[in-house]
Length: 417
Image 1 (tube, rainbow, N blue to C red):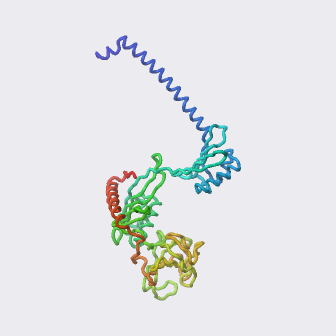
Image 2: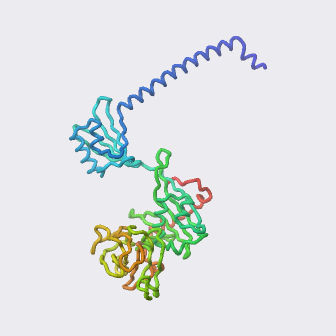
Image 3: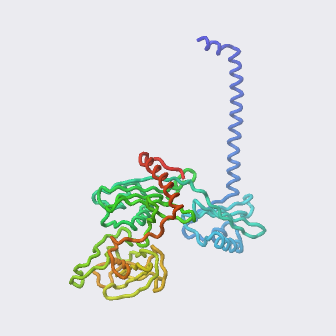
């Protein structure tokens, strides 16, 4: 109570009233300044900058003309964008254009085209000539870990979705594992898998997913592991835990998520001909028109039609391996005898031509002139690591494995890259 009495004596009370008055005056002045200043800055910003989101039907010419740019300016800007930034068209609901002026009545002095969150193109006008500069925006990259388990009746894709792995990442993982696994025979209930991949952030918000950094799957033939690694020459590949190339020269299953309807066999009753003979490939069920990708890079040595295979394409990959794709509904445009194709390039489309009871892909692998089982043949890796790179890879893999182990215990955490 003593302290309360001292506070409330006349002298102290007078001082408190004066101090309070001064404080209220300062607050009032501060509020007036803060209220006026943003309005002025906001008004100036609105006058100097116009932001336009590209919508359906918009063209570059229309958008530029609407901002008062001349026909000559429009032509010059279009040429500069094509030559220096590779931009020839605008994408609705994706691209954004900013127009900057020195004041509300001035002509446009700078244009910023934003085709993605990670890139912007700046155009400036000097003495009537437009210059173009491309700026790459740095990504906030974070490595996240997701793991799951195959349940009864699951496909790998369904199990991956349940584990929270994005669809685009699952497709990439499927493509990687398809070099080593037969998804029809190797997927069983109880198998566990995990994926380490990138998430890209900007200003604290996730924008998209990045690259797959590591994959693990408990396959029937052993645990399959793949790690993404950049070699000393700058090239990037996927390697197993010992540094051997994980990407094979050919894929066992060319079409993702396609169910095997007929296996490789030396003695099979033909469903159309009715008698027993060898089935020299594997049949994958797919709907008519499904794109058929090349199982590996090579040169087309046959593109034709016969009664058995219907429309078919044959590719020579090296001195030992060839692949054949049969029963196509049609060939891909530009794929002819002598054409060099890359791995994954569409060479034709699923159909039911030739001796076929329904739409499917008949896929063959021929090694040294002899048909082999695509599901069991040992496929050569595209490249292995050299001595120096392998040493660096092992060190990198050990660090990555430690990070994965920590993320398994804390799935909501991430590794800053």
